[in-house]
Image (cartoon, one colour):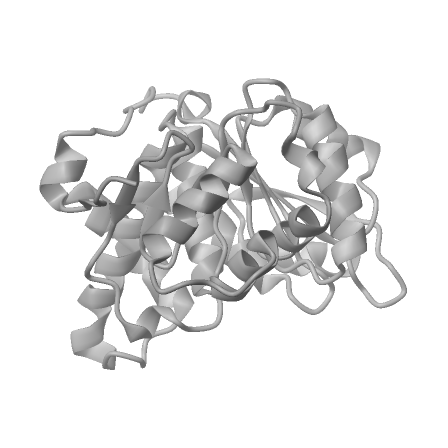
Length: 286
């Protein structure tokens, strides 16, 4: 593996994001986030707002039915669809109305806030079957757990997938403990699944190219931070960014926004939702 490329503002300026049609929300893409059990709808909220802050034009959210009304009030910019629930409050099968949204979405993020790996596997299987060939997909949280149990889910040759694992999820996907070289581990995951990978400040493309972001700090290790990252990736994909490009821009924006919050809240005192109010500025000022 070649040495990683360091992600800097110069790196990103040389790899500009697609502008889309700024006059038309459809021209900047539609993001659908599927996740959120009865007890964790906030993960979908964080991912969805992050997608809008990254520049997506339209947002659609799917969450457990009992949380749907509250989420629609909390995120008035989004169309919210309720999902059937398991007895424990987890999201279950996708209703017909949601299948229509899956078929029409530009980017689908699956996983934030889901809490049942078997049900998530069924949801993911349906999404990958019903989504249009050109639809990009972000897999996060329990969707990665489902993929670790059923790696064949991505064997249909679909491109335009980004995985956003934390260290534990990466170990499940690899079936072993992580080594010290996270860039190499990200590259191994990318090659195994034919997908771009964002892993703890490292981004890998299936072609073997690896990038590293060096400004991320301890404050990003907070509840909901990964949901924000997944949403940023989804929003950038919806705008037309390529998978590894979306991963690099999102990883940089996530890390640098944390740096910008640290003087106000300390290195470990800011909340994931506070990233949302700053990240668009970070992207705009690259």
